[in-house]
Length: 132
Image 1: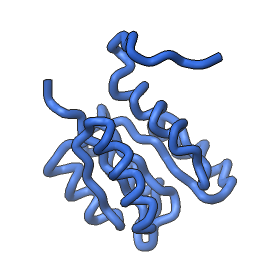
Image 2: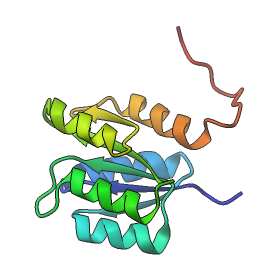
Image 3: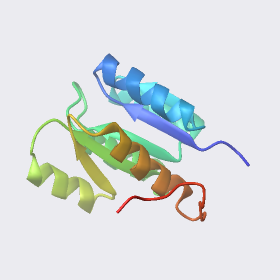
Image 4: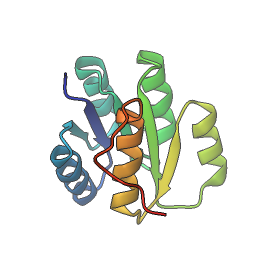
């Protein structure tokens, strides 16, 4: 089976490094971009299965990047990350096909479970239990 690909788009290096480590250890092939131009290049060349996309990125904001990603390939799953309670932007992102959003600082385990659910959701994984 091909490794699923995760693209992390955030202008904060620390967040990119953290998420790269988490998703690499989950067995995903990871890519990172600090801006929209680079992100869209990776989307075109490497066709990630899922994009973790920060809402606030200098130059091209998350909504704009989201629209471009969906224009390139509407099958790519997108999860937004935001540091602010920008409810109108979050609603607009959802309207443009974002699956969900995480508010920073986010719980890394929740994000990991959400990504695994999106990328492996079709499989029945009996090797982990969801606590109640």
